[in-house]
Image (cartoon, rainbow, N blue to C red; front, top):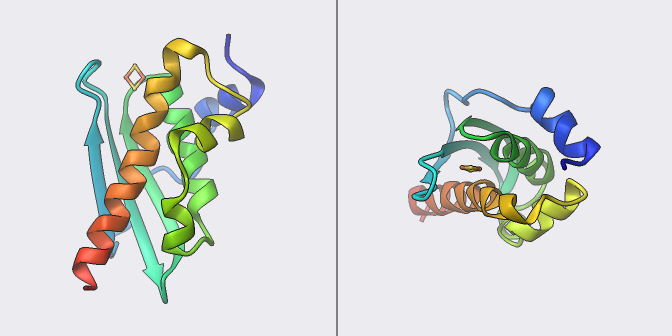
Length: 122
Ligand code: FES
């Protein structure tokens, strides 16, 4: 049902935790299942230097959270804004159709954190 990449990121999630002096924080919840994801960003000169996450959710939510952190690190905030639930799911070699909604959490939380960063630095 799940790809090897999903199982890898679920079993060994990357970048778990929080960044103490984060300059962008985003939190989203999935109303249908109650799962919650929070993303912390450390941005310097518009480049994402570090990303950490905390997810209270299903395996697919944890795997997509982990993947989105890896995809965002090193990108400019504008490049990171282009990441979508679709690109995150593709990077994991796909998710079962019933689990595609879980990947929304990861992309949405990242976008919220970038929005928060932009608000702080407007
Ligand atoms: Fe809630 Fe997957 S079931 S995010």
